[in-house]
Image 1: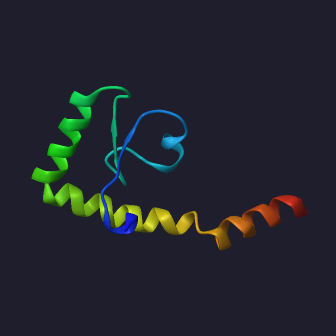
Image 2 (image 1 turned 60 degrees about the vertical axis):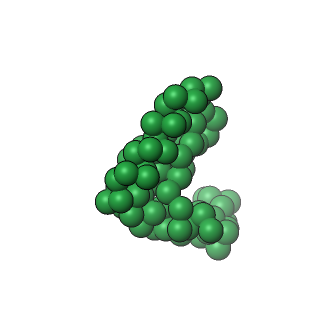
Length: 79
């Protein structure tokens, strides 16, 4: 389900490691309902942006597949 969704997350914790603002998701200011509401409206009204975020999110998710991460970890241990 997440692959077919545009993502809106707060700009907190480690979200910035996985989400790039306006590339594969949108950030809203933590504890700011008004900003969150603004981002939801933006996605509802801007189909082009919504489709781009979903497309880029699908590409991004592939980078974090367990098989890819396992290979990276194994390569790091070999060094």
